[in-house]
Amino acid sequence: MFLGIDLGTSSVKAVLVDSSQNIVAVASHPFTVQRPYEGWSEQEPSQWLEGTVKAVRRLMELAPAALSDVEAVGLSGQQHGAVFLDEKGRVLRPCMLWNDTRSEVECGLFEARFPGCRSVLGSMVMPSFTAPKVLWVARHEPEIFARTKHILLPKAWLRYALTGLMCEEMSDASGTAWLDIGKRNWSSEALEATGLKKKQMPELCEGSDRAGTLKAEYVALWGMKKAPIFAGGAGDNAAGAMGLGAINDGDAFVSLGTSGVLWMTSSQYHPYPEAAIHTFCHALPEKWHHMGVMLSAAASFKWWSGVSGAPETTLLAELPAEIRTPSSVLFAPYLSGERTPYNDGRVKGAFIGLSHNVTRADLTQAVLEGVAFSFRDALEAIRKTGDVPHAADVIGGGSRSLLWTQIMASVMNLPLYQIQNGDQGGAFGATRLARIALTGEDSKTVCKPPERINLISPHEELVQSYDDAYRRYRKLYPALSGFRSDD
Image (cartoon, rainbow, N blue to C red):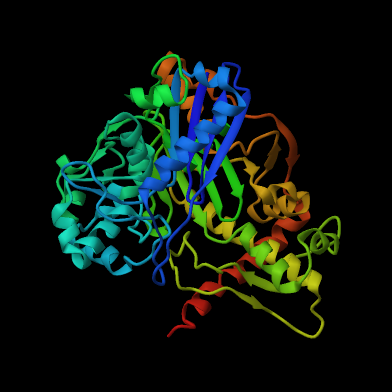
C-alpha cells in the first residue's frame, strides 16, 4: 500500500493507493493564506503539518487496514515557497508562497549579480521563484536573514517535519533559481547571488530515490505496522505528469484548469528562457520538461460567467455545436497578468472589437478563443527549444467541454485527447514515485498513461482562419502592455 501527500496552497490532500494502483481512500484538510499587503501571500508551515496529520487521521477512519499496510510515502507540493529555519530547525517567519509577488525588484538584482543565469537555471528569474524572495528578506528583514541556517521549499519542510531529513528532489529544486538544471546540482554562482552557501541547502535527490523514513511518533499515531520509507517525490506539476504517465520524450499535456499549463517531457536539456518557458528537471533521472504557464485559463471563463450573470452551461449552450469561424471579438486573458511568453504580472485583460452587433455568444466564444490563443503562445515558445509536441492529452475542468477542446485543437493545430480519470492530481503521481522508490521497478511499468477516450483533431477549415486570428491576437499584448491602470 502506498500513501501520497499533496501539499497544495489551499489544502493538503492525502490518498491511499493499492498495488494495482486503485485509489482506496482520499482525505484533505484546508489551509488559510495571509495577505497582509498587496502582492504578499504567506502561510505558517505549522498549518501544513497539522493539516497533514488530520488528513491522514481521516484516512485512518476511512481505511484503517489499508493505512496500516503503507510501505512507502510520496510527497508532491506547491513550488517556490521559502521556509527560513534557524540553527535548531525552527521556523523564523511565515513562508512566502509561490504567488507572492513582492520581489520584482530583487529579480533584476539577482540577474545583475549572475549574468547569464537564464541558461543555467532554465528560465528567466521571476518573483514566484524562491531566490528573489530570499533576496527580499535579506534586504528588508536583515535580522531574519542573519539568523537563517537553512532554507527549505514547502514539501521539503514537510518531509523534514515527518522524517527529520532535509532533502529536496530535482523537479521542485528547479523552481528555486538555485539549481543548475543541466547538471542537476546546486549552482554556487546562483547561491552567491543570493548571499547563500551550499551548506544552507538541503541535500539533493531524484524523485524516485529513497529520501527518509517516517518518524516513530507518526507511525504510532497513524496505526502503521512499520515505518514507511519516503520517496523524493515531485513538485506539483511534475507529480501530475507522473500520474499521467508523461515520462517519455515528447509526451505532452494541456492542463485547462483555473490556471493553464502546457507540458512537454524531454530527454535533453534545451532551454529557451527568453520566452518565459520553464525548462526544469523532471522527477525521474535524466529527464527534463518544458512548461508554458498562463495565469487565467478556466478562471477567465469563470470571470466571464460572473460578469455576464449567466452560468457557464448557459453560455456554452448559446454557442453553435460546431464553430465555423472565429469570433469577431478578441479577448486577452490577462486577468492576473501573464507568464508565458511575456512574464508580465501587471498587464491587464481586454475585449477588442466591440460593436453594436456583438452578442453575448460572440463574447463567450472570444473568451474561449483567447485562452486557446494564450496556449498557442506557449506552444510556439516550446517549439523554439527545438522540441515539438505532435499531440497532447487534455486535463482540467475546461477539458470537459468538447467545444472548448475543439477550439483548442484547431487554434494550436494539435491533436488533443480527452482521457479517462486523467486528473488524479499530484498525490496520485506521488504514490507512483513511492512505489518506484520502494520496489525499484522500471518507471515505464509503473507510470502507465490513462485510457484515451476521445481524439479531437484540428478542423482543417478552421486552422487557417485561426492562424489569421492568432496574428491579430499577437498585436494585443504590445498595445495592452503600454496601458497600466495603476500608472
